[in-house]
Image 1 (tube, rainbow, N blue to C red):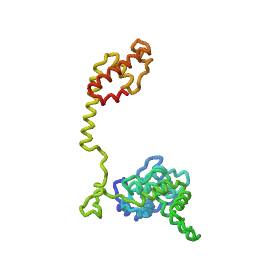
Image 2: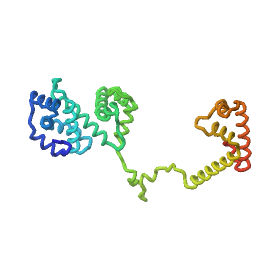
Image 3: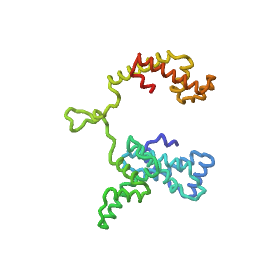
Image 4: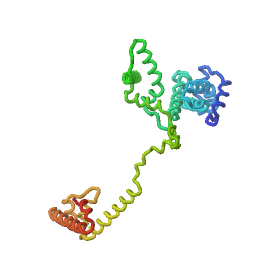
Length: 292
């Protein structure tokens, strides 16, 4: 049976009537699936442990996901456990499957908690599921000792208790405190009905500035084009290789290419720049800074 086609309610109904397997039968079914890919044996093994998946899903209901979805995710973890299970290790399948079911449920909760990914590392996952409980435990212990914990001290002790950094604790506190909110939500204090998105600053250039920038770019491009056109072919090659290339060539390498000395290349380069400055001075004086 393909459990991917079934809803949480379907799985719950199957779990209520599922058989209870003894250790020997369980191991026999697991070997039949592992060694012969016996689908009927897999179905019987999975169905017999649906109660385990549903009980685990119920423990995660406090995170707000629909129970049907949680049961389906738990059943996916159960099937992954059946795929990986080795009956020759002597461990009961329920013990082994608990890990996979819990991991599947934790991943599902964290994926659906917020549109912004809540965490992906082991430390972040530990914080997500244990932060509130650990804070409560530490605060209760401090009260019993007559000690008052400030936020920084509590954060440091939580970090030590869970094996993470105080910065990670602070980050997770912020993520758990603030839920997702639409930018199209009206501002409660605004009688004109403006939305929060109206407060976001648009960093893109204004039309006038964009037009001016495009106009200046065209002037620079056209001015340099006319100035370069007044150079000889050899001078244009030197200017392009020394100023316009991603990796400028050395005077020595250009000398080898052109069949002249390094000093002669330097003289040609200086002459080319002088011609460019003269042309730009008459055509567009503000472009001379490009050659400085």
